Image (cartoon, rainbow, N blue to C red; front, side):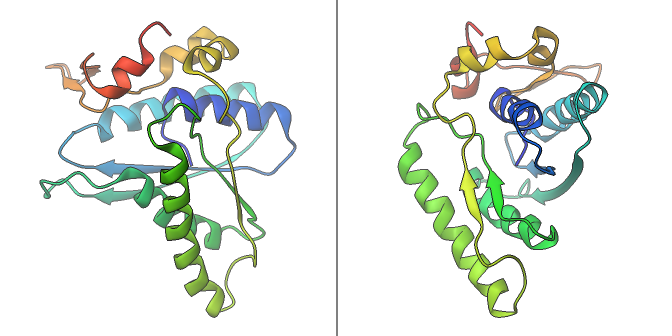
Length: 191
């Protein structure tokens, strides 16, 4: 699962460099009242193009979830579990889902367990119809890394293409600027 952020970009590069696995890279355009989907989509497009020019081939797909009419912001990791199940079912032979969670992320152990329970429940419904692989593992290729370590491992040009802000400021020329105050911006300081 690919967001265009630093963590998922480092995960993508690691999988491209260190494995021979056939990769399906999937991005979810998730619209909500934060308004970050445009900035994320632009980053994803730039990063996918950059990686395709420099690494081995990979399959890219995207889907969309639009919660912009709702006041509540949906829980991202649950939305990711839902879409990951759809992608796994849609990808013949898929037996692993890679997620760019970090050990230092807030409440990561509990979040990952809840995410996996949602996925497993959905996957069980598909398996009842004999769809998908019987066992799909979740892997966390960058789990023990810090943001600084991820950034140091990537070419600076690629780091600069990533997007992390949860509440981007929309510029009059149609571009975006990080807010500098959200949790994601603060986590990225000094990178």
